Length: 230
Length: 270
Image (cartoon, rainbow over the protein chains, first blue to last red):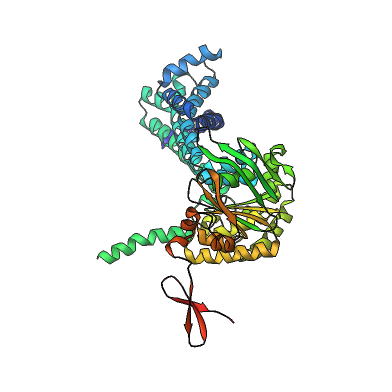
């Protein structure tokens, strides 16, 4: 606690840096994944190849990826862009499958009806397919968010500021409080992001939230069954 | 009036769903396409609004060849009601009904106001307007589907087995409602079903289809019952097994009509 009190400025600065490092990959990864997922879903033969190849990207070890980024991108060695791009690649690797699954989860009858109503192809995508894949996309985005916030700590290894600094510095100087602060702060960011995503989902997808009445019914049913047994 | 002129549909896998089909569908009447699965009835229906394009032949609506019309625009002026309602699950009932007018450029407020009126037309309470489709019963959803089909005030209403998935009591209600609406609004209704009783109940013209979209017989229900064109029709309408064969039994001084099992069904009026 004492360590935290005297280093509040540092922690706050790292929290902001960490957020700045995590948000762009989550957003860009999401936006990039949807058209790729759409292609994988629309042209079935391409689905397997796209999903496997992009899925494999997630297995590329992060430290070499960070180190190779400046070579690929021509960016300065210590630029945060290296980390943002690398994290975006991981985000896409995680998100593409969900995007394809989300678009595939839309009921064929609903799409048929939308076409029969007179939605053009483009209108049907924006107003029917995309909103209806929302719940699946949201669940994928929550995984991506948690993964990205956690991976962003590794930026410190190539000299990019993030909460990961508290791990390495804390270890080297043997200050457990510093390491614990790093872990807790990373967790807090991940939880806050998750809550924000759930909240955004509630606002944008009100139709997918079960009614309170129905949820209550589901909750009471097992109780009734249990009561019957005793 | 809708005219099919030697329409053929061959799907990419080689199956011929419809083979040189000719039919005239009269305006402001209900025409029912009836047949077992695989007879091409749904394919025929979907060719009217160009959800499916024919391989050859043409479909003429009020003198216009549909091949020259833009499919999306054509669909917006033809009502479509399908099995399982096909409602958009993420739109409230009122917005589902207002879908087509809004696509046509009607201001949202006006379209919603009109949609409320349509809920009355199909016998739904206005309190359902702000609910989502999943909060409605199957019968209610189907009524919303009909209201949506009527929303742009189309001349033509296509109905693809719309009552196939609701229970018999609700189905009977919806059938009566369809008759009432068709008579009241004077729409040209093209209705697809596999249920011959439903076909006879709703159709001014009934078209009995065999595999490949071959017309086994077309005519009014009375004409078909009076003179089934062949054994297939006789068996399809159940005439071969004595179903629909009514007899008269003299009871006192009245003529009682009995069905094939000898169960009295009514009294002949002098």
